[in-house]
Image 1 (cartoon, rainbow, N blue to C red):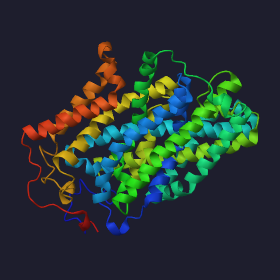
Image 2 (cartoon, helix red, strand yellow):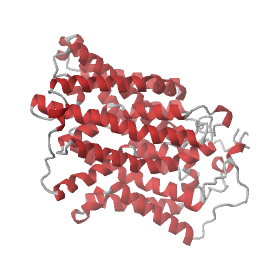
Image 3 (cartoon, rainbow, N blue to C red):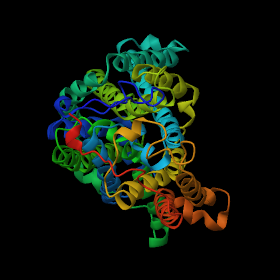
Image 4 (cartoon, helix red, strand yellow):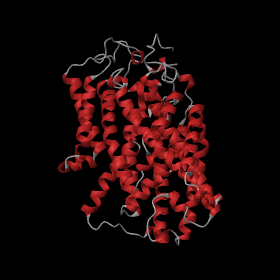
Length: 477
């Protein structure tokens, strides 16, 4: 059905609910989406960073698997509304934060995505720069070479954005199997240079006591959850295209843990092999490939990593902020315009400084922003499942003075809960005695915000519905 007189300040074609007849993403598309998003350099660096930090191979793989199984839970919970109503994240979050208040979590989520976009683009540009040095060694003498490659890869990302969401679906479906095959080929080649998997995986953990291990393990798990905490919020941007709930749930459950664990193992094994070959673990794959005197193999591997980075960057870091920025002013900002804004902000966030070393990447960037996103997820999930029992008034998500107007468009309860969650999650950064709270930033923020929100909605007697009219997903056709 068509929406009845949606408010122009809350509606455009990119934010509109997707009718059932236009939903064409099946189980394979979601599994391929996660394979494509997981098979990327940041995933590799996530795993290699744990090895560089002192974990054994099995400790690193176990940490990554545990983190991804944990984040899969809020991922599937938030995905439900997208598949049921065909709505994107910035529209879904209007139910809990209000039709105007939704801009607060949407912008927070968008800024984190912009940071990720910049990181991925910097990595992709570095891969191009390395490829050019392999083809033409004199390129290394060009001082501005890395910057030229960075902005060239930036332009390539913007081209995909301009072509739209269906280009992303096509890109993921074709590239994902190829990326895994090339990754396994790279693993075989590097480990053969190190004398096989035996010597590579024989290195023990550097932690001498359980206390030392836990000090590193706890924030590492939080970092693993934080790695996909962004997509755990905006997953409705993808599940709104699902042909059924089963398709998106099975596809995600199969794709996310499997792809992340497998590709992380490649990162773990290759980094361990680098320690055997060079005497120290090299966590940056672009730097590692530059050390091997096999131009053809290095060139092919860099192309594979470049394609994987493009897949992940557009799917994970452009779709959501494009919708989020569009939500600020739907009449003026389309999906494509939002994508261009994302590209500009991503550069301004200076991603080269976020990749100084594995510690700043995992414990600074990943854990830090998880303290912002965990509270948002807590409010959204508590509202949708505990307060509203998974039932939304679709029409009122696109109109003023309806079910989600609250106080002039803002649900103060959600803002109070969000603030409480962020405060508790990040206070450990400033109060050493409470540093343990920061190590659990996503979990602490999620729990505090969910509990505070549910309590406020219950005790303040906030009306969930101004009228008994509700819409079933069958009406969105």
